[in-house]
Length: 121
Image (cartoon, rainbow, N blue to C red; front, side):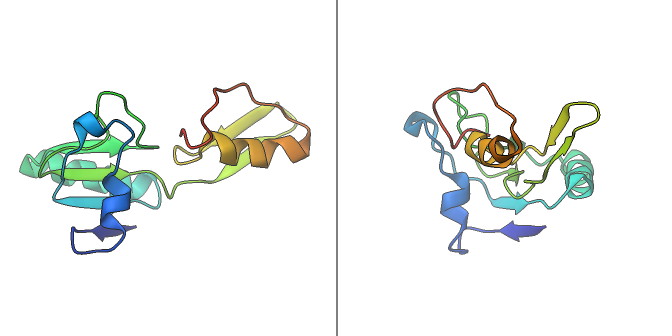
């Protein structure tokens, strides 16, 4: 993964949330690549007492997907999807939005029940 700071152009897009009442400014955003990145970062924030928020799609109505002066762990780049046709199970990583899931599943003949916001993860 990679770490974004306020001077990185992508930083502000990665901390923007739907509910403007809860705009907060973390010190950094970690764009994790996999569960090993998440595990490592969680050990570090726990060891050093760093405030942390976990962000999937960023649509938290209560603003829980960002924090002030801490670390946001963004799962947005964890977007793999797979279907096991023998069991009927679908595995979606936490960064997969509703629209991404529908785009993946519909051509394979699978349907998904969801709300009306394709950006939701």
